[in-house]
Image (cartoon, rainbow, N blue to C red; front, side, top):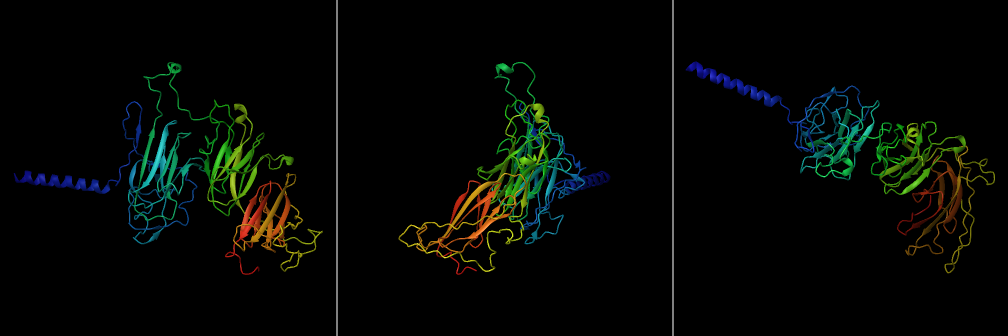
Length: 522
């Protein structure tokens, strides 16, 4: 009897040890993927296998300058996936307890300022036609992260396929998409703003099979023939299709060239020609140049830029038609924060066989607002004497009487020679400026309120070349007529004003209130 009791105690202790080891070494979150079928609507668990990465992604991570003021130390439920160069990456699935500020991988204490990392997951064996959804959510009540999500292809080098980096749509990130190939694809989760206190977030993942037409209400034309196959696009369409409208515009980055693009229509049954829409994030003060390049023989692009409200800004057909360059280039000085849209097309339809022969690259780059150009000399302007170094004073003109309507004796300034590309057509762009000191605060120009001696300059937006400059007269006016291939930029340095002038020209008025007028002109 004593031996039996002793054996039972030993067996119970052994079982307790095994249970303790299982609890210690088990993962803190169970990853599970589900999908649905229209027949059963039943959730089925998919196997979770780590994927060995053979082609490391060329992605900079984390975003510079973003830190988390840690409130809670957290150990992420998934480890070892904080860099894209990790030997193994976990499959994308439904997880809880994830953390970008990981107490295991860095010294993290409450009150410290820590740079958040990125977490990477992999999606393989994609079923063409299925609709996949990915969502990451900070834990309820904590609002501890402002999350962004990016999906990359496995091309060499990798290409951004889809992204959600909006900072104004809440703290979550969600992407619903189909895929053109079976993968694998890489999913990156990261912090996109300075609002970050650590703690955890969760990931939801799933996919759905497209629902076929119910059998109890068949269409008369579909009673025979094979079942419809999910459409994955024309075989020769480029990697960003479909991107035929503003809603489907492909998100791109600044100073990155995207190649292997074409004008193959995504829908082979469509009679429309292919248009490609792109969008890039911009901020005020940027001088952005978007252009097409690397055109295949016979390709003729046309480019139009649109602002965040989808209003047309400017466009170009042929960059240098006289030299046979049919590429397109448009520059824009940004005055807002948000998306800058670009539409690239040809403006005519092609047969399916011709579409496959088209090809081009696209990029949006940041260029210097002003090109460093030596100041004008007497040899540049033989008809005008060299200006002294002191501030020039315009010829005195009698100030009109307040009871009379002033006749605008605009100061006519001869434009500087316009530096344009050989053969590039130019347009005469009229620009005028009125600056006045609203002494009586009636919000309109009155006789005697003109500000004399204000410097105004006109620049070519494409090259940054100074086209003309001058000073306002005693009525506060100055005007120019310059030749430029596209829009120009009017700059009034002393009053800190800058405005884009389209080729049609513009009259600009600057009102200075009594509280804003500087004490002296330097």
